[in-house]
Length: 228
Image (cartoon, rainbow, N blue to C red):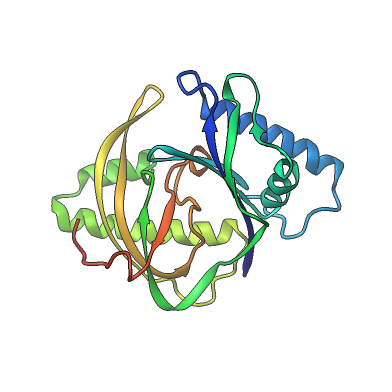
């Protein structure tokens, strides 16, 4: 299948007071208002996957639009240099020249990806199972199985019907992080799969908050050595 995508690079006007959550809320509200007024503009409409995603990657901030989110983001910003409102206002520093068409689906070859932002993989039930496992081998096998399940969930949420099994080999490491007032365990690392995924899509829990952002690793830039 083909996904319509559109990306912006952003720079907050007030970095010390900037809130990505407020920017997300503002943009999602504006997009919902637009969709309500333009119900005929539903090409490739996605209901279950966040179609606007704001992500902090290292020191950069990006906004990606997918499907109807791509159409809205492109139309609403093509003649603008500012995005957002109040203390969450951002300057647009770069943008795609037009909406892109990106393939998504099972491929003939294996593809390597890395997590650019932490993968939030464990709900309460999975966290208990992970803690109860003994040793690295059991935990690695558990996370590989969980990643495969998340890839299937991603495909389903994008309305892609999987007819060929999705393969997955994960090499991830965990670290403790804090979300709001909660201490959570997140994962970083690489994985190999036969699923073609556009860069900067998110996998796992809290994708709309920027978690689980992935990017393809090409042979010229890196190789998959299996090391952590």
